[in-house]
Image (cartoon, each protein chain N blue to C red):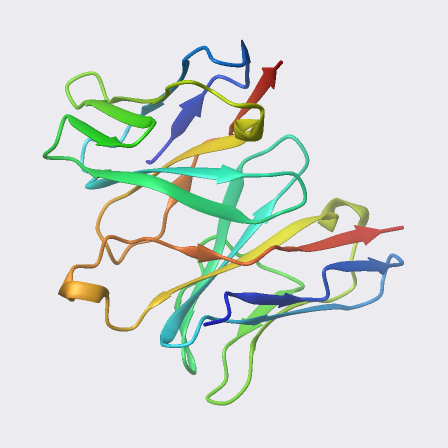
Length: 111
Length: 119
């Protein structure tokens, strides 16, 4: 079955880089996603990566995928206090299947 | 283009009452998903619907929960005879009927959620 695991909490200082890690179990996963949830709000897609890629960069965000180890990471460069939120890793088997989410990593950025 | 609209944002019910949560997908989206977020938990899939059809309800509790997405109007998640364990945030998400560029990346667009509190 599908299972997605994340560390629950990460604390960094403003200006540092943040790295949030995720592992998944289903080797058939085709798409992997990072969503952000701010307090009291819904989830917002940050970025996604296809399983045939090993890296994707989008401004301050870098996603690394190690398919052999089923490990996904999200690096946020120059982390700002506005980046404080819960970050969810998610996977799907295809573009038409439902997403399976991890429990989320709470990122706290201190000034 | 308005996003996914959910209402009510907050709902308080006493045990045994019924809760109805509504979701209007984004314009051009005919796929609706309901997820539940329990305290300290991630999002758990409940049900996936298209207009007038339930496609996947593998995450729905067998009793008291039902969902519909009629031809006209919003999708409704209905919880009968609520219990304290039903207290959670219920998120609706939608995805496009025809993805941009013809490539379906599976991206879901989420509403802000309906927070149910059962007293």
